Amino acid sequence: MSYAIIGFGNIGQALARAFARKNIDVTVASRRPPEALVPQVRAIGPTVVAKSLQEALEADTIILAVPFGEHREVAKALPNWKGKTVIDAMNAFPVPEELDGLPSSAFVAKGFTGAKLVKGFNHLVAVTLAADPIVEGGHRVDFLSSDDEDAIAPVAALAKQLGFAPVKLGKLNEGGALVHARGRTWGQLIFQDLFKKEQ
Ligand SMILES: NC(=O)c1ccc[n+]([C@@H]2O[C@H](COP(=O)([O-])OP(=O)(O)OC[C@H]3O[C@@H](n4cnc5c(N)ncnc54)[C@H](OP(=O)(O)O)[C@@H]3O)[C@@H](O)[C@H]2O)c1
Image (cartoon, rainbow, N blue to C red; front, top):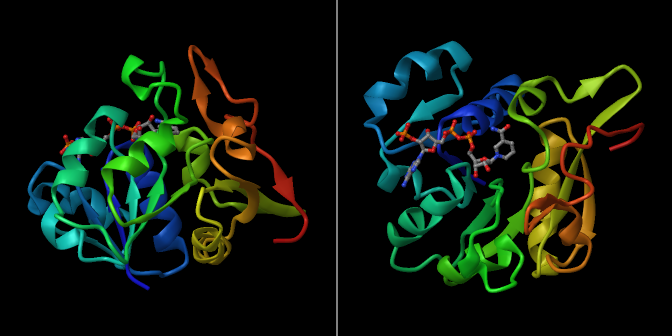
């Protein structure tokens, strides 16, 4: 498996820290040229490498950590997303009108034709996501949801590798609704910093 994080702001850097903590290779990219990311990348750890967006999108698994409205720009960067897993770590808040009542991740999925999309790593504030998810007595919970049942397992495996305890919520408009912004309200599980004894 190869991994890339698109967006290297608060959430992108928090996730890069999680990969670095476990010595897992990850590519990071933003709109800026890769050289501009190097100082922060170096500060995080040697398994993190900055590349151009196009190069980063060669990874099998792509984590979206850009402002919600920018996901379309990322989607346009590849003609076809077949074979890729996209992890949506974004929150659409407040929800833009054009979502047409869809959960934001279902709306995002429409843009990434052919990809398997899983919502995850979106419900914690960046400073919490950046912290070691293994604490005395447990593993920090990462809620995962997807309309593609098969897509969740590899993302759950990644979450475990990073030290989180994945909790599967099911489909985006069912259990996944708990980790989506709705209108001007947050899903009930957003910002809940929970721990499980076992992964
Ligand atoms: N902040 C939180 O605590 C938090 C918590 C949960 C979820 N989220 C969600 O996570 C996402 C990112 O939030 P953030 O706080 O990390 O934002 P941020 O600090 O503003 O960082 C956004 C990053 O996205 C990059 N970017 C923007 N447009 C791009 C594009 N078209 N292609 C490639 N890279 C692009 C920016 O790159 P440049 O600098 O090169 O422009 C920047 O590195 C948002 O959807 C937010 O809702 C945030």
